[in-house]
Length: 539
Image (cartoon, rainbow, N blue to C red):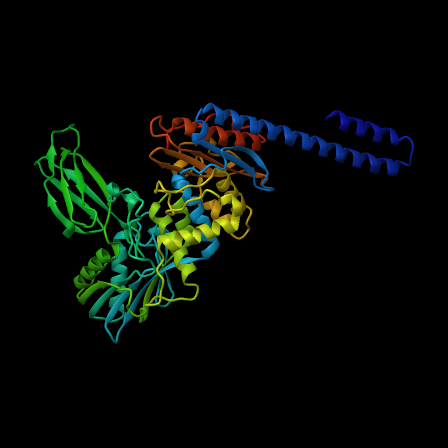
């Protein structure tokens, strides 16, 4: 109890001897309440001061000067707890996803669902699959959690990736269709610029550089499982999806046991022709993943083969053209993906394809408030998607977006620029928005438990204070932002951005990020369970 509080209680205690017992009791209780309020205020001020100093020490210890920016704000009132280089433009890496997911929630709504539809025009004998930009369609990591319904609206259990094609073929067979004159994949929800012009061209086959289409399948990537036997040959155990016809050349051989693997699978930028080469140590196996090219066209061929295998004749196979009329026909089936699934894969798993599909879907929604697919449709693109994202950011945080440059939705581009002050303001505003806060916060990785920070903050697992955050890394960049929440509901938003780290590495930036997080956790943890340092062995 401070001096003023003690004096107040003492003075009120003396008054008990001068008046009625009832009035003096009331006065005394009021004094105690006031005194406790003063004590609480002082304690909170001391805690805030200690937190600010701990953050300052952690940031300064990194010794990164203008290569590190940090802003920490209290969510309840927006008070700035700490700011260092907060208005300087920095590359965000995957912290860009925090903006994309928030804007998607604002524009599309928390109840939005991506809908991929199978249509049959019996008069034209045309089968059309209409894409909605869903990045989760056929993604093996989420397929079992997706919602399936048949034409009658009956719920179907989750399907494995290997069964998805069978379900689509079953739907056609149930309709009694024995021949199809034309199979069309309609991916016009997005444009055909599948690869962002600011992304690295030498990494196009890597899964994190997956192409972005209005119709996506299997996360637009291939998985090749190979095994080296004793005969000197390398056998392909599986190719998922089964695009075995895409193998153009296979010269891979089994090497000596315990030798170094040189096994590789490659394709060029504009083809799915796979070249398999190198050596795989005898009696070992491996799995190689790489992105696919032209997912709509590749899936069309895969689907046509599955239909023919079932005895259903298929004529022409193509992708819809911009001038084609709107797709029509009887709905044979709809596959829906709730936006919450896409948000979680975007933020917790840091899936780039998902972020870009959200960005282009927001662009399509903004450009076509009342439009439907067809010749008049304005396709979602990086142009209208980034424009819609900029508008959403500015409407939410106002002038705090100064210095922002937006080239994509996932942060892979080195052209992006944000500020830590702007990001903290964005996080704080979304956290306090009752319409989107629940879905937004749940999409972020939980430090010590999930996603890219499962192991990095493992000692926070089970702590009553929760750290929901997003990591970010590209060459020379390391970032971390998020929201720390106390059991009583107090929340603090933070953003720590490190740039120009090409020569020195990311360790110092990561330690600064962790020092900031632990300082906040310690201040909000009344039980003081967060006194140990986190491990630093993760992304």
